[in-house]
Length: 591
Image (cartoon, rainbow, N blue to C red; front, side, top):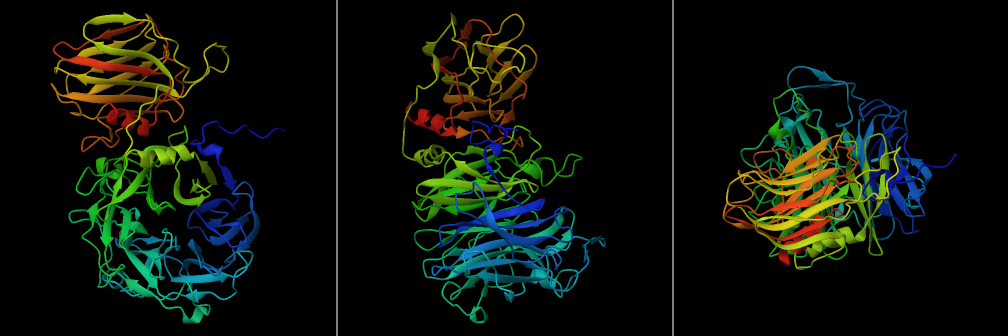
């Protein structure tokens, strides 16, 4: 039997290589060991998340994640629940593994509403073991990490006698030689499992160098009684903090809320004090980024620039309190933005789709980044399958290029028109198939989608700008709605997909650069207006829509073009492929 062929698109999660597990698998995080291996840790077990038997294992890879060997149990399957591990490697080669450990075998926990949870994987002690042979074996003894109580600990239903916490953040080494670890404190268990949460840090001046584990010291930060919470006016959830150090020694932390946006904060004194939490924005004080209750990770790369994993929609803010509220849903696709430092702050690019599954109900989260020899790999898990993905380096570099490169690409160009003023018609070359019909042959190859680009000044009236539909309805239309938006509709004669720009994205009488992208691989429809990807704003949870998975092609008849009355369309270009968001930004800058 032949192994199934992997997808051609490296963004498809099936294109990645599986990291072995025992069934449930969470937080596949990697460090590179001094013998050249990649060492991954994960929380795993034969049951579901939080079931008894959940424990920590590691594997090693000598071929950049293609295969994994040397499985080792940091904690055994028959011990207390051991969960949510993170690795830290010292310069001299030792690797530490930090994790939750239900030391007292607490069988259940009380909820703030009087109920109980049988799930007990987010409490107990924060502990570590270590390996001096590159992860092949782990110390027999585990060591306790002392964590200072906050107000949320003492105010929980146990009065602080039992404390709730976990961690997903990667430990980092600061330029002063100290190590900084992340911890997420939980003040209450209840609806949504964690009902109140906030971020804390454990700083150790001697973890990187001290070889006697009994002599390692930790300070709990920030100073005071309260950790990093949601911005003023936000909900009680503020968790899964990740942190990076800027070139001047400042710290940047980003974390999830249930307010529709991630939160962030800066520390200028090594983590003792933090700026008032604010919702993360693409630029300081600028447009807010959108993100649901899911892991969102920031990484610093070898070139001093940054990458940020998030999901680019508003999540529970838009549906909370309704029957549809699923606070941990919609983690597909995963988006990534590139960051650069300016005046002590991180500025973020417009995002690209990093990973996707055509099945919108598949979720992916808890990633890690590996960088080596100018290449990038990302891990992720669906909780039952963990993978590592070789990322297209041009996609990553394109994110950073958005800040200073104004470039155009003519690759895949099917039609170009300088100006459309009245009613015109033109032959349109065949648009590559969105999907091949499994039982029908076609001379047209399968492609990556369709992109329509133009600079438009609309007069406010509804106008059918582009139309190549045949009598069967097969084809596409681009319509100026008259309400400050453009709507793209795609039909293969059997089914139809449509999406439009954010409401009010186009102002009547003002010239706008618009790029409509139908990504037939990721099955996503999106618009980039004046170099900014539509994200739904305050009106919609999503700024991007989904293509009908079965949509075959949109080859209709000749293209009919209509210049809006009292307005204009110029620079019309139609591409037989899906442009990247970074390309759309570059085209806007080069207009």
